[in-house]
Image 1 (cartoon, one colour):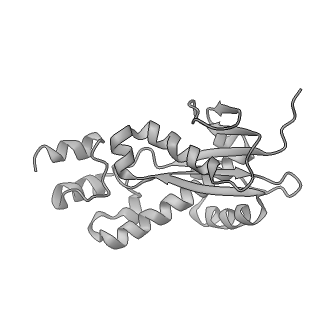
Image 2 (tube, rainbow, N blue to C red; image 1 turned 30 degrees about the vertical axis):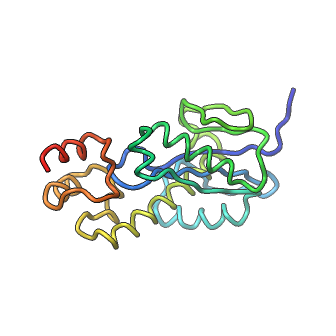
Length: 192
């Protein structure tokens, strides 16, 4: 039986939004220095996520955050771009993992054995930690985009297709940060 010491948890944030990159993170936790309160990032308050992000970055043996940009999403499709961001995150680790736990049901092309785990961000601390880092990075990016495009409300809805975001698209049109391959954006392009 093989015992893996360096296990990376990998997760993404931002598959569903109409705008912005998709982010992914990879984290190798230090089993000798556990972190309390890890869970799926969507189940944790923004304040607690920010606290946990600092703790994860301080205590993890290695962590990495990567992304695939809007042009890559539109060229490849969101699933392939998400897997690419995950691959980049794993490749960015200073310590290469012996094994990777990937949240979801698809595996990126990695240089180590891996296992896809549906709902893994609520089941494995390594994936929970990656979920938190990816979500924090994506949220920061969307707040930055809100400064460039204040009329869209990115700081509130993070690019998801909320009623307010869809109304802003109708009024102001699309930006270069909108995913043209996503139906609500693509449909607007037909009329411009």
